[in-house]
Length: 247
Image (cartoon, rainbow, N blue to C red; front, side):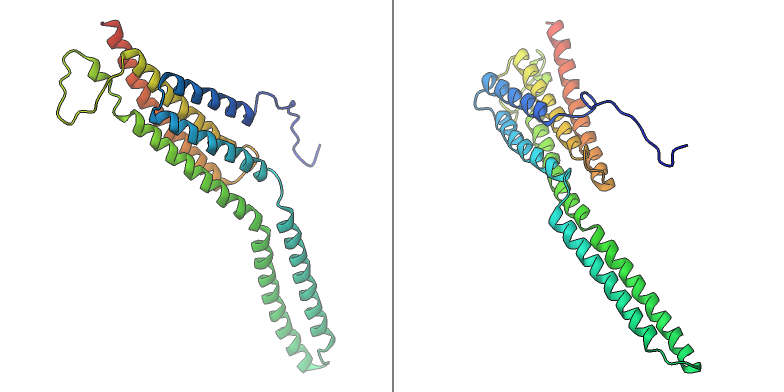
């Protein structure tokens, strides 16, 4: 019976997100938006998301690799701390006098050694987690950017109301200008939903090669936000479909 659990997974071809495919899909979507709605703000959002995506791909590659300068410095510092502790303990034992007074000093030395070990353990724990905390901070900053973009996409679809295409719809003085046909409005909303879907996949890239509970929690939050916003958009698309069928 093996001492360690092993799983023989096949070579990953369809079980992982491919950054280059996400970038390609996003670039095509950006071009489609610009071609159908030249100069539209949604196209500018897609362009910015494309720039953010390029940075995320670079970040994900860095998250999957060790930061060797930090690791080497950590190993050297841990070795130095261990060596220093051993040296201090050796000197303490060597110069303890014999007799009853020596026993008292041994007890005092043991107490001091325990304190040193606790301090050493805390120092090693701190140094051992430096690299992970640096990566976590970078990943959380990147995910915060994606969360903001999701809200921006939602703002662009906010005034795209399918009810304006109903004959009984009455405008007010403050109603936004609506010039899109039902087909154009459907395409616009669909582009918003696609941007949110890509936004969600970019978030998922962060934990594909970097396992961190806090980052995973934030990724889930971004994915949930994107899904909820996309659901609102698809409700509008369904209303548009009903309006189109009823003429």
